[in-house]
Image (tube, rainbow over all chains, first blue to last red; front, side, top):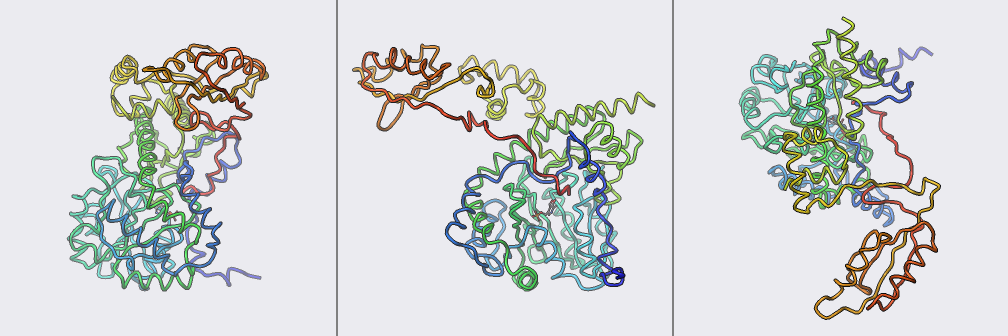
Length: 391
Length: 160
Ligand SMILES: Cc1ncc(COP(=O)(O)O)c(C=O)c1O
C-alpha cells in the first residue's frame, strides 16, 4: 500500500525533531554523560506519590469531570493567588494531560486557518507543529543573546501583520533559561493590546526562577488578563513528568471551548494524577523550595564552569537550563555536539534544535547531580582545549 | 551562619571549597571562614563518610538498645547518658520520649560482642532498670542515603 497517499500531508511534512539523531547515537554508546534530559532528576516527593496510591486504594479509578476535579481546580486557583498573585475562578481552569495538551488546546481554541501565531525562538519545540496542525501559520521571532533572549517590543512589533492572532510567550525559557521581568512585560503589553493579540503564556517553569524577584505572569500586567491563556503544570514544579498533568487558566469562554475539545480528544486527565496533584498543591510548597535551592547551586556551578572553559554563558535566571555559546570554537552547534559526543561521550542538545536562532549555542540541562555535572564539565573542558591545541 | 552552606555540606561533606563557593555565589575565602567559624561554634560537629559495611566481608553488626533508667535527682538522665557515650562501641545516644528513656546504638563485629557489651556494661550500670536489644538486620537508609538497590537514571527518552 502506498501510505504516502493515506497519511495526512500536513503531519507528514512536519520537520522531525533535530535532536533525534543525537539521542539515537548516544543510546548506542556506553558511559555517555548526558546533559540532554529536560526533566527533573528528583523523584516526585513521597507524600504526593502516597496521595496517588491512596486514591487507587480508595478505588478512585473512574473518569473525573471533563475540566478536572473541582477540588483540584479550587486548589489550582488558591495556588495561583498565593504564589503569583493571579485571580481566577475554578471555572476558568481546565486540567489537562501535561502542559503539552494545554498548549495544543489553547492553539486549537484560538487559531483559525491562516491565522498567524508569533513564536519567539529558540524555544520549546512543540509550538510550531501544533500551530501548523491547527491550520495556523507559525511566524518565528528570532531572540537575541545580547538581549538575554528577552522578547523586545521592537522585535514583536516588526512581525505583526493584519493576520496575527496570537503570541506564544515562553518564559521562563526552555532552552535558554531566560526570563521576562515585570518591566520587560510592561514594554510589550501595549503592543499586544494595540494589535488586539491573544497571548499563550507557557509558564511551566514559573516556580524555577533564581533572581531577586519571583516569576511575573503577563496576566498580572494591566489589560492582559482578558487576553491571556496561562499554560502550566506539575511536571517541572513537583518533578511529576510521568504523571502527565497540567492545566490552563484563561477567561471562561476560552476555557469552555478548550474543555470542549479536551472532552472529545481526552475525556478527562488521569484521575490518579489529579488526586496526587491536590496533595502537591496543598502540601508541596516546601518541596518546591528544596528543589529550587538545589537547582540554584547546580546552576551556578554549570554557568561558572562554562564561562571558565571559554564557552560564554549569560546568566540564566529561570528553568533548569544553561545556554552557552560555542561560537568561539568555530563549529556549528551540531558539529560541536557530535564531536563532543564521539570524543568525550558528553551529550548536549544543539541550540538550533530549538529554532534557527539557537545556532551557535548548546542547551545544557542541569537536572543532574553535582558529581555528574562536574565530570561533564571536566570532559567538555578537555574537549575545548584539544580543539584549540589542534588549531 | 550560612544556612545554604550547611545544607550543601549536609548533602555532601566532600564538596571542594571552590565548588561550594561557586554554588553559593560567594568567595572561597568566605566559605573557608564560614566553615571554620561554624566548627568553632560547634554548629558543625564533624564530617564523616557513610559506608555500606555489609558489602565487605568484615563483620559489622549494630543494635538499637532501649534503656530504662532511674533518673537521678537534679541530673535526670544526663549522668547515665554522658557515661554511656564514652564507650567506643557506642555510636549514638538519644534521650527519648515515650515508654523508655535512652536509645543507644551499639556497633560491634559480632552479635555476641554487642550482646556482651549490653550484658556486661550497660545492664549493670547504676540506675539502669532494664535493657531491650534490637539487632539491625539490614540498613535501607542511613543519614538520608539510600543503602540498597543500584543507582540508575531511567530518564532519557525525551530530551526536549
Ligand atoms: C517550555 C515547556 N513547555 C511545556 C512542556 C511540557 O511539559 P508537560 O507536558 O510535561 O507539562 C515542556 C516540557 O519539556 C517545556 O519545556
